[in-house]
Image 1: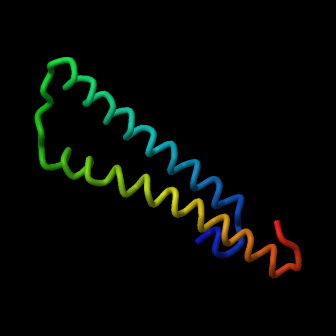
Image 2 (image 1 turned 90 degrees about the vertical axis):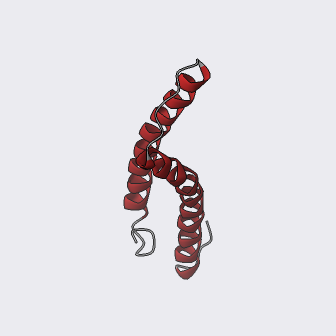
Length: 84
């Protein structure tokens, strides 16, 4: 919503916040993969499986959000009579 309303600084801050949260999840994910690769088999619980299922779409939607922010910037610049 921030980019749609023209608040690109807020949009950038929100994306950075999301990146930080995603990075934390990615580190946990990588740790579990390393454990399994070293012979430790982590217990598979429904919650872990659900978290795994959320990682890929979250990364994909992050890319889409970045593209949308860029498009909103271009539309805003065009409406002001200048292209960025």
